[in-house]
Length: 560
Image (cartoon, rainbow, N blue to C red):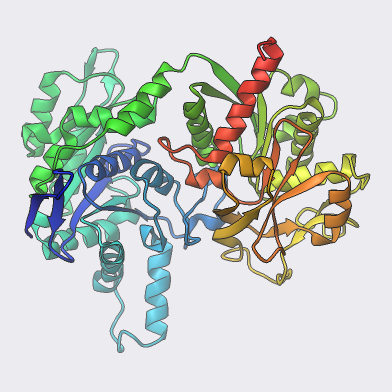
């Protein structure tokens, strides 16, 4: 593969050019333990390469047998991230989009379940012409085709592929074998392996230990892969001797051993990694000639977040508090909103099941805003309704997302419109007043998987609404993940009592957003704005919500 640099007319800035269909492939694996931050490493590298002018695509290969994470419990796997085209994916794709600032798609996430699903369907259709279907070549070929496809579909210069799990896991072996074959087919000069490992610190001997990394690399080498770079996850800076030892015994160049220290702000990761010339080493090893990365905007964003002195406290009232990753994108979007106002956002994680009529006032006191996120099922609903009621009555900024919007509608119907038994068809099919119900065209005879309204849909915004003030436009497009909708039978009644329908589908059939006009900020949206928030481009709804929380805090202080 040939790559080069030319100077564009007018700007005189270096521009990278590459031969057509000659993508470079970077594979990121993890060793020793899980949860080392492979996703953040992949996302950071994507940001750095994009800052060098390269077109980057990212994907995640997950070894679990579920076809996709859509039906998995949030306690098991954290949030389900939804792409613009409606694909339900692993949460690491959220990191990719937030860091790289590129919309991903159906070619960005592949599970073992999806691989076998595709292969078995091909076998049933006779596409293998009677061959014995085996892991090699049929399963590995399916994986390879998926990896190659993202490069073709996106015309990327570099495809970054993260392999889920930990080296040594039996579930990951077909993926490892597939990417090994890709490195041979694409050529060693067009492929790169990055291995992320843990370097533990033993307090007893007061030293870091390289042996776990050595064993992990040996395991990888036993599968036919020699890592080109090793990223060392650690909580404290490493001694020079560790780098030399790992370079020598793991057979990598000295500057290909990169330190990745745990940081208080994950958006500092690209800047920290670049101090070790991470992207320069990657470009050198792949034979890519590219200009130095322009990280001006990213650096300014990080410095702004560091400089924030004041803080607001937001109550995140949800039902999956056992694993905060269940609301990962919401939490990050709140922090992005804080960046835009120069404040830190402190999240008070609140289990909605623990909020009762008796204690709601006490538990919710002292907050600057309340956010009720998405979710499924009846558990914890009454606590969410109490939180929405508290925000409405106290003039406290409220943002309801998906289920959070439906909660706002139910609370308003019960306590303002006088429909005391207002509920949702999701929680009680026998409910007499289902202000939330199945969206048009759906019935109860459906499977749980793949039946949601998924992906980006347009929305028309009501002039003069808080929604319009946030977005600054009348037409938007946001991502959805839900099965139930605002029941149009109650439109007229609820509007008459003061509920503003501030966002509807272009044909007017679906209510996409509601709000209260006589409230500082009380907005519910059926879609998931958190999926489109970026640290350097906070989502306007989250920026508006956090801004309202800042004003609410000033009012309490008497500063307004």
